[in-house]
Every structure is written in structure tokens, then in C-alpha cells.
Image (cartoon, rainbow, N blue to C red):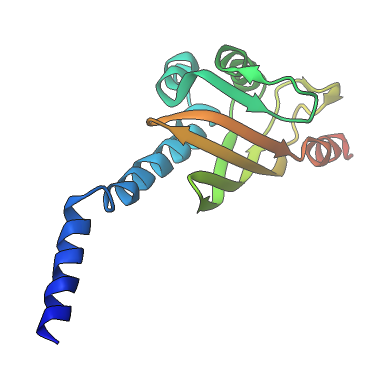
Amino acid sequence: MPNRRAMLAGLVAGAATSGVVKPALAAASDKAIVEAFYSGFLTSKGQDVAVEGARLMATNFESVGDFSGKAKGREDLIAQIKRFHTLVPNLKWEPVEILEAGGRYVVRSRATGAPNGPLFGVNGEGKSFTMMTIDIHEVVDGKLLRAYHVEDWAGALRQLAAQ
């Protein structure tokens, strides 16, 4: 029995000083990067989107929104989010649930806002929308490398078109 305890104690001590504990710490900081993507980049609050985007996304970041084989790069996404913030100055993206699986983060979020002009051809001025989004993020070396995403823009436009 004492030999088993000593062996177990040695294994626990070895695990604590080896790389076994580090992935949990990395996962916590990776999750913080994902959370900051919503609160500091996607949500409109007057921040410099280019600075936040560069801080959070790798230079070779890919935003994949369909199966066309074409992905947006970091600079393309930054430009798109700038346009959204101009059109929807109170745009808010709020994670409702974040699941970690194999180094990827699956986020179910709520996006809300009230456009100050036509959004995708629908005059939504004076109206607001709420939509669900689902994203899968890959974080490598403390930066977002890739995001697969689906947003319910059709539902948002139906809300804006309603009389």
C-alpha cells in the first residue's frame, strides 16, 4: 500500500510540474480571447475596431461563413465590422453559452441592434432586431486563427420589415 501511495504522489507531483496543468491555463486565456472578440470587437462601443481586431486575430485569420471556399481575412472582417458599427451604432453581441471542445470554442450568442438606415436593403430605421448566432472559434498562440459562423440575418430582417 505505501508503494502505491508513493507512486501516486509521484505521478501527481510530476503532472503538476510538467505540461499537464498548462493546457487548462491556456484554455482559460483562450476563452478570454473568444469573449473579448464579442465584447471588445463585435460590440459597438466607440472602440478602434482595427486595434482590437489586430490584438485578437492572427494575421492569417480566416472568417468562414459558408461553403463557397472563400474566407474573409482579418482586414476584410475589420472593414465589415466598422461598416456594421456605423450602420448599427448600438450593435451588441452577447455570448449566451460557450462550450470548449478539443481546443475549439463553440459560442451561441445573441446579437441586437437598431440600424440607422437600410440593412441589407430593408429599411429598419427606428426598429430593432435580435438574432441568434452560432460560431466555432479556433485559438492558436493566444490569437483567433479561424471562425466558422452562422447568423440569423433573415430573422433580423423579418423583424426590421415588420410594420
